[in-house]
Length: 325
Image 1 (spheres, rainbow, N blue to C red):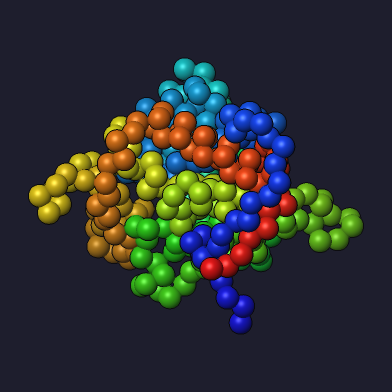
Image 2: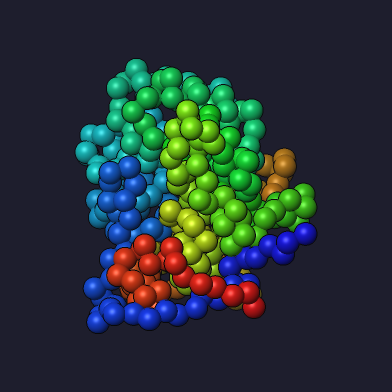
């Protein structure tokens, strides 16, 4: 059995650089003919992102995915349409009520650029049916589907019609799936095994590389670079943003101090009941930065990572060597 690595198990090896200033390094990423300033995405969780932050991200050319909890998707998408957001990107589940929402979006002829099918175990029949349903009803909408953790699952979701696959199971800090079920794959190895895959294995099929979003396990800005080296197109992070002063994470009193309450999507705090709990509430320190400042910090750190990788843009990560530690 090969050892599986999480981000903290890996170090990246510096390479010769002709970059004269880190600020010249280009951190932008293209996703279906759209360009975004960073390859980072705030996690689509209630304590990480809300409609106001989504609006800010869209207006400032950052990619985002609005969460699917306790909000009226049709109403929020209508707001985004009326305000002509640059990017309209939301989440949905796989239940009958979610299909009703899809019908409403179609009937109202609302623009929806990206729709994330957001479930814990994405390699499932319900995922297959939902992808097919969305493609039939919203053919112009790009589908992000997840979460999965294996090459076979990545290929299957792509074959079913997903445009982007979100990988990562049980690796987020407020997630208890790995402890309660025993199932998980450490993120560096998970991303590495699911990247560089193609949605057609034979000459008569489409042979396009499957873009993936690495979701979970990011504890510092440097982990974003590690995920990109492993092969991710984009990287999702929760705690980095929940810790921001203007995040939706509420202040909680913990041991006499006020901290931010960051909780998983399958936690009691998010679900409001105790059925099939696979998440917890984490009390995290406020990072003393707004979302705007945190995004700038991440951009600066990725620019530094690009310079250490010996390049001038994100393609530099394609040839970086690494070591386990």
